[in-house]
Image (cartoon, rainbow, N blue to C red; front, side, top):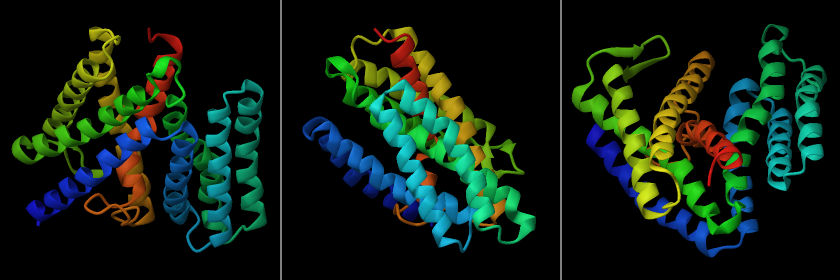
Length: 271
């Protein structure tokens, strides 16, 4: 079963990665934004399906609010961004009042409706906004953010299967191990260094290594956070749209952390 799942994962990646690279480097920036909007539909539907189970109207509202946050980050206008960040949490309260449902679960719906669009919108908005970096390096920084997350996941997967002995956080994710977490950091650092060598030669070596470490550690925390949410909702995978990887949220939970981190790096320190 594990070998079969690995084969499906590799086949999915072999198809998806070249398409992503082509979209980043050959298509105009607006096409990348449209792609992010499509991803947001699936990810937000999965997230609000957990926090607002059976409430289709609230799920649609959650998708629209996520789009608003992504668009605000893409526009890079501080006034628009601040306005959206202040109003979206209030919208979560309004949604909770409009459809209170079972009062025992209303706190989760209000928190999910207010925080969910900010969480998804910030992560996906960062993936979108990195594409706009001046100097032609935008696609490379997008790939760096994705590489930090996916190489961390790959390193953790193989290190955990081959060497895993000590449980990392069994209450939340029973299969994750300390050895897998260390392998994840190693995989992320290797990915960052390879990305520097191939597509980001101006990125300082020390910065690349540090981004690899931080990206993996923070990305694993994001992964554990999503696992906690799924366990609280009583489900194993957020969905099944990505063959071999579960749902969209299962695939991008670490990217939701590495992309904003990479965007902040480009704003504050990148050469």
